[in-house]
Image 1 (spheres, one colour):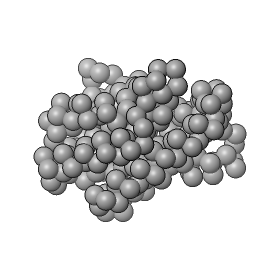
Image 2 (tube, rainbow, N blue to C red):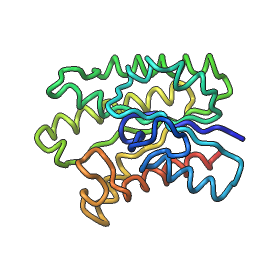
Image 3 (cartoon, one colour):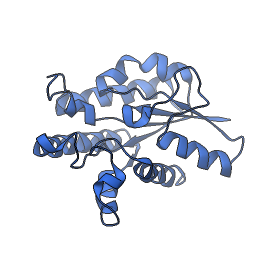
Image 4 (spheres, rainbow, N blue to C red):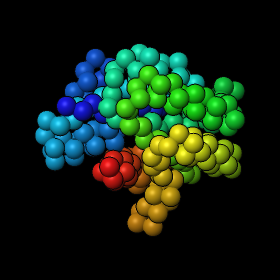
Length: 206
């Protein structure tokens, strides 16, 4: 059985149970697990180690306990919005250059420890909403910078990159932003479905 690991912040966490890997939360990891578990019974196991509030530096700090030690076969990472958001009020964000440096180090350490690991990097995204409207220009510009950095890390390391920003924007042609995102950052059930479909599309290419 191949082990799939989801890493990230609250978007990945999605209120998962810390003491029960059978409940991967209310978000895209569960949707992915449902789809693959149904279509390929017994072929995959699923672990969610997303933690609300995490920045890329937080992921690096738990690379051993929540990544390497779990020995996954496939791993996806969705990180970046808190590296921007935490600068507002908390003054504890991670600027773009450091974000890229730490992200690249994270990937290199993972590849050194688990050379057969398939890693998919997901694009951080943001839209106008109750959590972002007051500082919208800042959010829009800075998250785009983190997204570009994530794409460069993926390209540099020969990894698959999953675009999400354009998908969220395109979805607004069908329904308002609030249908897809609760506050401009955290997805609704429909928003998580957008992410899950993008994840599965990329996963199934190999």
